Amino acid sequence: MLILLVDDNGELLYSLKRVLEGEGFTVAIAENVESAREILEEQNVSLMVLDWILKEESGVDFLKELRKDGYSLPVLMLSSKSEAFDKARALNEGADDYLHKPFSNLELIARIRALLRRDSTTKSAVIEIGGVRIDSISREVFVDGEEINLSPKEFELLEFLMQNAGRVLTRFQIMEHLSRDFDFRGSNIVDAHIKNLRKKIKKDIIKTVRGVGYTLKRV
Image 1: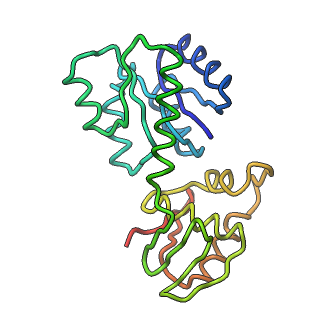
Image 2 (image 1 turned 30 degrees about the horizontal axis):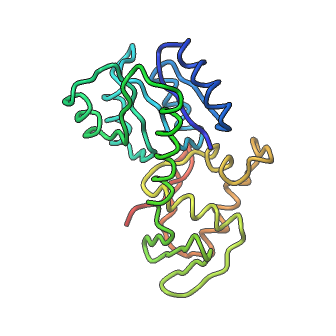
Image 3 (image 1 turned 120 degrees about the vertical axis):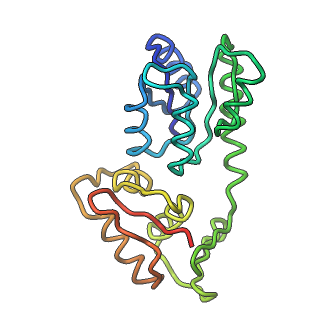
């Protein structure tokens, strides 16, 4: 489970990184918007902790852009702003929670865990798009009401695409999701899985984004 910390205060970043790693989280850090975007595009981030004040643009403006781009991951906004108006603005622009500075590490960890629990419970076990329906609990897949058989990796790939419908997923993101135990860089494993999946579902909903990866259309 990867947590992304975004703050232009390097000392605070590394301090929080050590705290969260001590709690068992995997942590990536970014001191600017550009670095944060690169991490979001290349890795499967479970939650982002975002500071309001950044050098290039405000964290709130960055968050607004991410929501427009289709990023739905939970975001915890950090800020020294204590006015109710500022908190309301952050929440209205897409923040899932707001933590006022200074804060205790215990409260930060509790807020992160609460957001991760909330995110996991709000994801429906059953997703249906374009005549394709998957059940994440029973691991069954139906196309136009008829059950089809997928390999474990094919199911994980289809589930990942459907959970992120409308969002372009890079090959790196897909490879990382399918297996954290093997290095598939330089191979065509993702393309092969996509090809097999398309043959089995027989639906034109998985689109290739040339030079980037794949996306599953919202229907």
